Length: 326
Ligand SMILES: C[S@@+](CC[C@H](N)C(=O)[O-])C[C@H]1O[C@@H](n2cnc3c(N)ncnc32)[C@H](O)[C@@H]1O
Image (cartoon, rainbow, N blue to C red; front, side):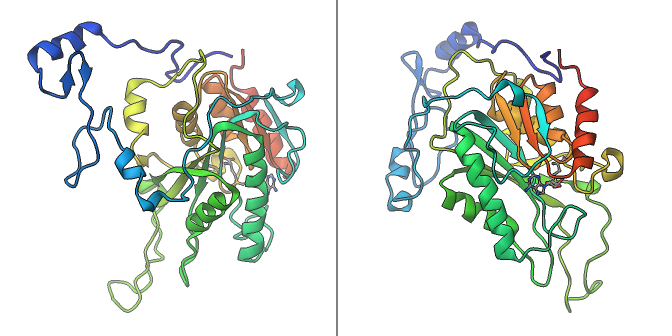
């Protein structure tokens, strides 16, 4: 596969000259005897957190039985059978029998919302949560130790508001995932000029018009993954931007890609760049028209998508065929 979209083959090496200059000119700016002075948790917070010793914070009762990072990241990694590499399968991801345990490095997905789209069933909230839990339990099985999941969800309705993201978090923790964080995707003006504001300019019953979605991020077993000689492809600018918890980029046009609820390629692109190494394996269990697959190709990663609707599998394959996979 070729590397594109700002991908880089080799990690950058820091300039030794710059480090030396800091030692001479600013001996007490957090650097001692050639290495940084570490900080620790304090009542007043700390401004710089490089080399920060947070053991005091994590030893508090708040973290008792709270999904601590318990496993070494050097677990077994199985290979995906070659016939399922860079493919989109027309079947439900409730059972991913094609995949052995511990073979996927990252899953990026946006589940069906059970709101009446052409592909949606009419499930109760409990049935719907069970469907997602079944699929994410399979995702847990196929992820390597240290593997990550990024789940894009929006909340639903108004009367009352259904905080889907909080249900997904509860169910993912129940499965055994460790939560890494929560990204707010600010869709800004691309979210459309919704006029569902309830009572206009009146406190009688004004409604919030959501212009954001969530990307919930989890790990299996360990927060870290050893590079083991694998390359990163993220640029410095991307890293500085993607590690912030608010992301801002426009939504995808449903008409343009022929799917009622696609995410833009930018969304899986960012997740892949931040959370995987070059050549890693990326899964989308609710693949739609293959936005995750396209992002995987553009970043030099392998992929597998599951999608129940033949029509969307066809569109995904057409989009994939337009990418350079050499
Ligand atoms: C929100 S859409 C994903 C769109 C995708 N992110 C994209 O950009 O094209 C969810 C997709 O999941 C599919 N789906 C629903 N249930 C499924 C299941 N059990 N297994 C696999 N796919 C399923 C739906 O047909 C729908 O295309």
